[in-house]
Amino acid sequence: MVSEKQIAINAVLRAMQLCQRVQADMVKTDAVEKADRSPVTVADFGSQALICHAINELFEKDAIVAEEDSQTLQANPQLMQGVVGYLNSFVEDSLSPQTVCDWIDRGSGEVGERFWTLDPIDGTKGFLRGDQYAVALALMLAGEVKLGVLGCPNLPLRLDDPGAQRGCLFVAERGRGAQMLSLDGQLSEGIHISRTSRRFAESVESTHSDLDAHAHIARQVGIMEPPIRMDGQGKYGVLARGEASVYIRLPNPATPDYRECIWDHAAGLIVVEEAGGLVTDIDGQALDFSRGRRMTDNRGILATNGELHPQLLECIHRWPQSSK
Ligand SMILES: [Mg+2]
Image 1: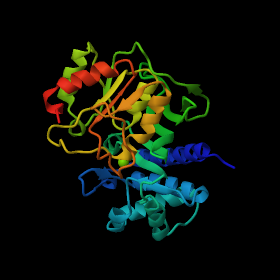
Image 2: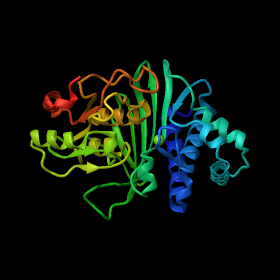
Image 3: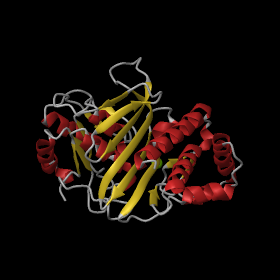
Image 4: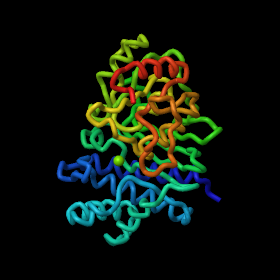
């Protein structure tokens, strides 16, 4: 029987190919605004349709909790046409719009004992800029992340080598370590956090966190190098392979009640943990993926190489805006 890991890897690789194809052809009109004002594209829907369908084929009973649903698509015939067109060229079939919506809405499952969580494109704004984004899939069991597959189509294999090949797949299984694979299948290596790296990773979007506070906290722990700013969960990959020592996400003071979505962190968390790092919220609490689509009991994110964790929690605790 094919393993969950292999299914997840194959599905994410296919979705990455579709996203790359869309990005290569991209015209600005492909993006529409969702109700929460974040953009969503042909590639978000196409990626979700492919991955949900692949899981459904082998694990029919598994719930999938994914970011998108077909509502926006149903209200936008031009976008629908785009999604159906890309998918048909991809699966070499003639899927109907209804079938495509059914595949996408397979991702409207509920959080439970066993479920998958998916962000078909994490970092849509990065995707639209032609920059970093990720396809993130995780399998959850009894409240714990068991498997994470994180595809980063535009991430170089090494950040300090501008000529490095682009496209990384991070894979982690609970208790079995974390690996990085290149998209051409030539590279597959175990990855580990670094005890010596002194760099921060953070979001590009200032609305996602509190970049001023990050800079202040970085200085307090003696980190002077400029942060690595990146859209999507590639930040977890960069931390897991030792290029950064901290990924921090303090709640933006303008939106203190914002709670993180499970699909934005589940795959990244297991990649970092299996590489030897630590991930909690900014109060030092474990991330609780069992509350629903959002982590209602957690505030912000702190992912580190482990060693820096206590010191950073202390600095965060002293930062005025982060007090409860
Ligand atoms: Mg997304």
